Structure formats: structure tokens, C-alpha cells
Length: 168
Image 1: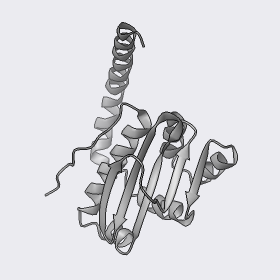
Image 2: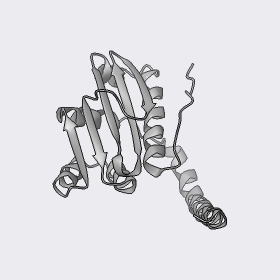
Image 3: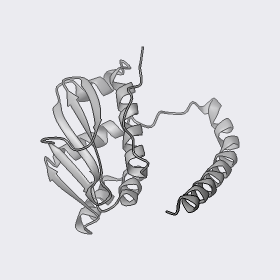
């Protein structure tokens, strides 16, 4: 049985995305998926991702087939990725293109320290994060999309109203 750990998630797009990635990696680590299990079986690494400018950091620990995530900075990450701001991080991470990350390093939109080969390894893990949607459910998702967009618009308006009332 899978249990969802309680995490400290900030109201920041990058932190929310990373927490979601961490939840999915936790699910995969406990799922019995042989391909994913093989990828993390003999690894003992810590990968930290965040934005120093926005005060966001989260790290993922892989310890011989076990996975955990933590809010904050790791003591000694094997790979550390820092984005110039949270929205740049979200854009680059959701793009799914390793080449764009390399371009972002050249453009100083992000920096990396540590073992660069772990980025390629983590990219292999990332291919498992988004689950495959069975064909029979795809029409339902297409029907729901307009409602999801509408809900997002209403949420942004409500959030803007609350920020205005709080003077922020």
C-alpha cells in the first residue's frame, strides 16, 4: 500500500512542481515497476533543485532502491540545480528537453554544480513521471480541459482578489 508523506510545500510554482515530482517518484519507487526499480537500484545520490533567488529548494535522495524527498537544502548534494527564478525553473522542467537546460546554463538562466552525468540519469527517471493515459480515457480528458481552464481562470481571479485585500 502506498502512503503519501506530509511535506512542507511553499506557495511557489517551482516548489509545488518539485513536490509533485517527488510524490510521483515515491509512487514509482514503491510500485514494483521493474524498469524504474532498475534505474534507482544501485544509486546513492542526492539531487537538489531550486531557486536561490526565490528561496526555494527541495532535494531528492536515492539510496539503493529507496527514495525520499525533503524541503530545503541538502547538506552535500551530488548535483545541485539552481534556476534564476521559480518560473524559469517551471518552464524548463516542464519542457522536457535536456538541450534547453544546456542552453539555459549558457544563458545564465540556471546553474549546476556537481556531477553533470546525474542530469542525464535523472532525465531517464523523468520519463516515468508522467503516466501513460489509456486511449479509452483520452476523450474524457479532452472534454474536461475547457472546464479545467475555466477553473484556473477563476482561481487566478480569486487569488488576485485575496492578494489585493491583503495589500500584497
